[in-house]
Image 1 (cartoon, rainbow, N blue to C red):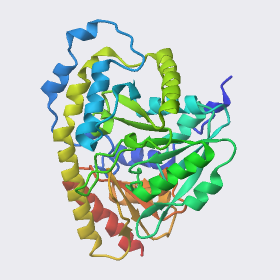
Image 2 (image 1 turned 60 degrees about the horizontal axis):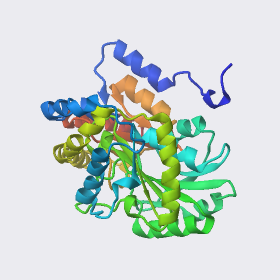
Image 3 (image 1 turned 180 degrees about the horizontal axis):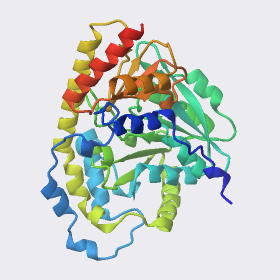
Image 4 (image 1 turned 90 degrees about the vertical axis):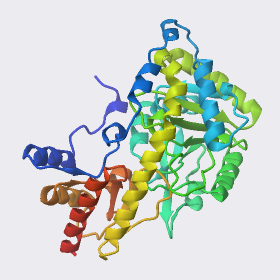
Length: 391
């Protein structure tokens, strides 16, 4: 009765079952996997946000496939203010309800059923579901860790076939927190030119570089056809406000062709709603206070993590350059899932096992750095107690 593309394994995993078991016992679970910023104790300007959704202009139905000009202009202004991109034409933008929808549009644009896209590994597991729904095959290419994360270009080159249509990069990666370096971008552009491939860049965490210098956006990449995806879910920590976009850049002729086709795709769905579009300038402006709160917490939690790690030798933190997550390398005495389950049952601490993000082997845990600081410190203490006891 159902399509093969939805033939997923829908049974709950052991970690989910253990979470319910521990919480039903009445135990207070310290959640070191928090990804929802609206429940992370941040201070939002509630009045201004809610007022922005009440524009009288939202009562007029003005179906614009790319999105309302005012909203697209606000996004272009964000790229100028935050990333120094002064020549971004709002016509290069198409608004979507989410980056997931943006991926869907780009996958439909680039791929026939069975075509391939190269995606980083480890990375966020969302890609697999999106690809299944679009009948696209994902081919992983490895990120390798050697005094920092880097792309494995020999493996990437070998992964290209006649069915490859593009390369996906996550900048910075989730969960490794690694940025695509300038020399890597040069190699990516060369590879894409050689094989007539597109670049698809996910930049939802771009504004959360841990160093002082901002990182360059792929929206400025003009060498090859590039689709840059982002949105207010992370930029302004407002995942419930469904505003995202695709920026198309590259050689003029191919950009125009891509934009024309994307506009038809967007026109078919007309998914953006008017109140959100009229609110876009205000919601983007919220980043100015929210990002500072998040970066302060992220850096404080990293400092506390390093302080506690310095007192033991059971595990180590891998280098991280940006984003909201960090990766611990831990002794392989059991699978990562077994370790996460044991941690829940014995210490009431929730972490993500590395295999959730397609790490190539056991020995990795992923932690959220936006967890409230007191909970994070206590959770790390309990985690290290278990690891040291098991060594």
